[in-house]
Length: 480
Image (tube, rainbow, N blue to C red; front, top):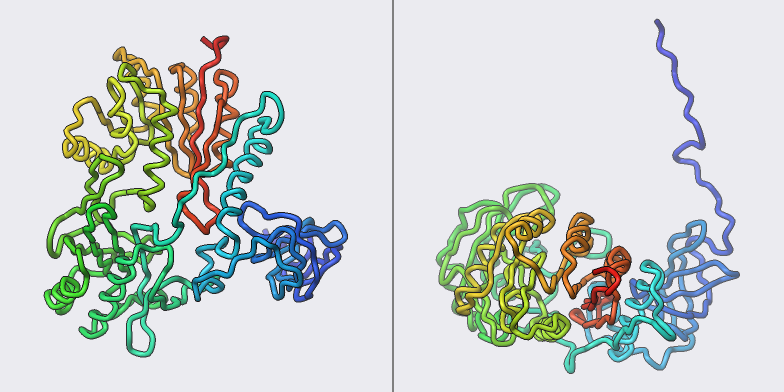
């Protein structure tokens, strides 16, 4: 039987469909900005059509070039501020307009804090369906910010490239993997900048090649630096495509000689053609396998691949609020879901009868047990596995939680874990969130059995649009 050719339905894929909108790509428009969206872009309207303008602030009148249009909204870039907001701030970073990492650096810091409070309120109202104003509304407190919102990051992850015979390292240019060289980042701890600069200089002198992502050639892919802010200890991680490093000993000696406080030099081998930073194998080239730092009075061991909050000062603020919301008096049994390396668990253990931590990553549980041992904490138990499996198994063993604390990734809690919480019926639930939209979604699920009493936003990442929150939920008497 002869094959028949199917006719393609709809327009040809290369055909352009004209949209009936009042702006066109490439056009420069004048627009009044009435607010900011959750990504920090200004929001304006032209003949009722919504236009998101990068770099514009509420209350401003600006000129902007239209970059992209859709049926109901479009995107534009700021070209000129005609009437500036009183809250506009001159960004001190010379690479601000090229980097994009600090998308709110042009907004005065106090206004950033108010904007982040509003982000949380908007998500609770829009996604969760909660009342955030008037009688009976959830209290969303003002965002807890930093007295000095600079140089707060204790970890740098810098891609390495090559330019004019020298190694460069910094950030990727917008919509590309072309590396823009950077010697200083104003939100990085100064030791991070100094360590990256020392590696670039030493590796260039020793003719160590940079990784070429397009050709999948070269050796040095990334430099990762971790700083123990309280201890002053520094770890330098060299991410390479293969284990053999030419003139390795000279490179190690150069790093030791130029980086004050370095106590650990580590190599991670990642031979894969991937944009994932770390490979599976890690070896210590010199010094300790870990560095140490403190959050409050709790000491933590930090390895090359272990997760540790990048802003330890604000982490202490966040965890103290978590401890307050848990209401621990020393008599409570607490379950910490998504416990990671035990950071929140060990804080809770200070004022709880016993804390049970569960985490799906086995290596993190190893770190949690080590951190408990370092601090002499004997009233904490850690287990690897899915929280929605481990917690019911604990219940079968007679373990009853008075408080359950969750600190999920950006995607929020697993649906099965929310069901488990409802079945366990702890008196309190404390939800630590790094994503206001999934926080609102998950609180809506729990709201039939729990009253959301209050939410405290915390600014863990100044000058960015990211906001962390901690929410207190108390079991309804009718749900008992």
